Amino acid sequence: MLGGKKIIVGVTGSIAAYKAAILVRTLVRQGAEVRVVMTPLAKEFISPLTLATLSRHPILVDFFDPEDGRWNSHVALGEWADALLIAPATANTLAKMATGVADNLLLTTYLSARCPVFVAPAMDLDMYGHPTTRYNLDSLKSYGVRVVEPGEGELASGLSGKGRMAEPEEIAAALSAFFARRRSLAGYKVLVTAGPTIEPIDPVRYISNHSSGKMGYALAAELRDRGAEVILVTGRTALCPPDGVTTVEVTTADEMFRTASAAFERCEAAVMCAAVADYTPVEVSDRKIKKDGGAWTLELRPTQDIAAALGAVKGDRLLVGFALETDRERENALSKLQRKNMDFIVLNSLGDEGAGFGVDTNKITILRRNGTERAFGLKSKAEVARDIVDEIEACRAERA
Ligand code: PMT
Image (cartoon, rainbow, N blue to C red):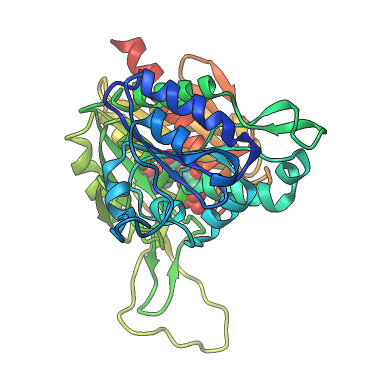
């Protein structure tokens, strides 16, 4: 239920705006405090008075109150809310959200909101299926925006297909489910490793890999959202550390080993998502090594396997690993699961388009120690993180 939750409902210019009245009434009946922000065009589809009456608060549309010139602070609104829900969300608003356009109060509120954001798209089937809309929705998902998928059926255009805004009860149920699980990991201490390691050869050159950190950061954010205390040990990435997560940046595999091992002592679980170099140069030159025209042989030594080291001391703590494979995927993943004493391993393959390094999406199979397997389709890394954290919760519940 939504008792005491503060929810901003954003309404945009779609025929489905009439359903916003039922949505606002449903949220208020379930105990939520609702403030409505409308785009200027939304006022053409539904009267602000209707939404003001149902939400029991004045409607916000303009940056300045037209009556007394008072500034409507989008920053204060974003800080006030426990969730921002944009329903209906038009293709136009989704495109602006995806690209950072901030030309109305709702969009500035979205850009400054620190709370979870939900969108319930509503549009014609061809607009919904258009590659641009698909791309914008994928971008928004990769930023952690949650999409309440539209339904199929008769559309305002007279056509039939996918694009009808989800029913108000479904949208309210999605919010309730989110808040119900939000504190489900309260107090649980979890180590997450992410990103690449960098193994220097000389002051100029190094050995590394293509990990962007996106998958590990999405996991840290999802665990945090469910109330866990997260320690993120990360190689160098171009990403901003997630708010509310203790982040420690490291460079080499040896540093990651030391930092992660120390952090694991304070944790009840670890998720090993980093792409750790398996080998590092035996010697690091303090001067740039000059080329002499001939071949160059670099001597490497194996690094510590961090996951295996944690697996050896884990006791009844939960250990989750990843397997990044290019061939014999299942077999290699199962071997790592056993060898490193993991509770489950998340297999992703570079053979699957849209999976693995750098991209905003991933395609995983979860292989459990007890022999069960779950394969998932291609999803945003934020959604993949939800599936993995659901599995962590399932393992935890089985042990309780
Ligand atoms: O960062 P992104 O661009 O979003 O990409 C995500 C990802 C592809 C890096 C991620 O999804 C992933 O697969 N991470 C693990 C990559 C990897 O090193 O896989 P592996 O199969 O080589 O290693 C198996 C497991 O042992 C992993 O949990 C790894 O973190 C761990 N390991 C490996 C070597 C080592 N020395 N220490 C380790 O802890």
